Figure (cartoon, rainbow, N blue to C red):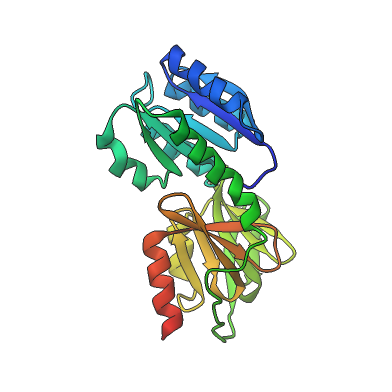
Length: 250
């Protein structure tokens, strides 16, 4: 998710708006426009093929609207930074549902876009900051998680699982040494995991509470969880952050 150079897709059926955003981005170091799309279907196909870090997305577009496009993009890569740029305020609650990084209402000032870009760039710096809160550790011995995949059946030690996430339309289970892919949904796995250890931090993530190292602010409605023993991180919604606090206050 965090990069020294953010690759950007601009998805808007208004050619003039695409040009404006392209000019703004060209003047800010650390951002590179790698593509444009004039409808939601084209935006999704481009995202699937090239996996941009950031997407500036209009809401009302032909073929596939921005909200539906964002949902499909997030199922491939939930860490894509989605910034809705639209003339319609009424879609903000829908943007919340896909945990957009920001929501810009047209016509917006260039300063407002620059503020958003600077917040994206600050994500890199956050990796070296102190955590918002140190979190303690539950202590419990776990068993095995059994999953079916194309290679057969895998038996995974639950105490080695660091993170489970949606990835390229499948579910990826990361342990200290391996990665397992399964067609099982996160909800299916959540029911089979020990709820005192594993926590649904976001619709696209389940994390091992033992592995939390740091928490950073991210976007308008979301946090980033830095995890131990991996270069992967996870997203945490505002509502789940409050739930997480209550867990460790017990």
